[in-house]
Length: 305
Ligand SMILES: NC(=O)c1ccc[n+]([C@@H]2O[C@H](COP(=O)([O-])OP(=O)(O)OC[C@H]3O[C@@H](n4cnc5c(N)ncnc54)[C@H](O)[C@@H]3O)[C@@H](O)[C@H]2O)c1
Image (tube, rainbow, N blue to C red; front, side, top):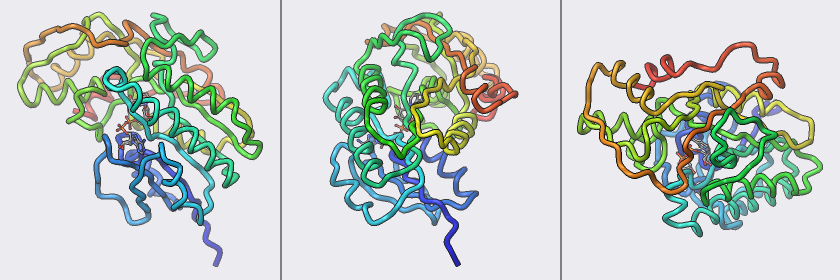
């Protein structure tokens, strides 16, 4: 009997978003292939239908190992995922984000893969200090923002006549499964970890900064929706809630849910930190005719804490 399972390649599948996506896709008929170099991701208990390839996407040789398979989808999540880390090592950031994306594109072209999804970031907008839409200016203020924006441009330019290209500009993703040990990426995870360990929160940068926090289940839901697009063109979407949350209110809500009152200390902000940004999600909601709101920060935090 014909195998009705679809093949999907997820780069960065050992990371927070990648592994959450895998857990969801495992409920349906997918053969899942993962490439990860385990730089920030770690070896979780992968389900049986996951084929794991350890390797760095910055080297095309990593993809050679997968040449004998055909793929219906590629979700490209691998990359350095931290503004702070991009200042520590801009070369590593560029290799992991720009060069890796070029290699994935080459593989997508060679294999004539029909659907390609890329995780970009709200960092491409820089400090616009407003509710941003996809057509707004992009003025990144970090190496990470530059490398995500450059990747977007390569994706747009790259000739892939057989492929639907989807760029998702993710805002601050949080939820169960985020790496609590990571101290340079993921505000909610960082604060939760600090509270659990020391009953103290150290905030890098002002408390009146604001962000758009999107719950992981909504991100996975939207990635799955995008996997069904077959328009063979370039699509770009904000992935956000359209709600602004101040850092001070985020911390207050975590305190309330945890029923704790830890000490807060505020230290100097890190380079490239945007003061305030939140997104407009009308484009993706209209595209998929989504009526419901994204998960509220209170509900999402309760599920996370
Ligand atoms: N989490 C967020 O809030 C957020 C926001 C905007 C964009 N993004 C983007 O979404 C993607 C996934 O983010 P995440 O939160 O799951 O991060 P993560 O760090 O948990 O996952 C990234 C995964 O990619 C792997 N990786 C990194 N560089 C690699 C390389 N060169 N070759 C192979 N594997 C590599 C890591 O080991 C890790 O498993 C990243 O590209 C990130 O930039 C995330």
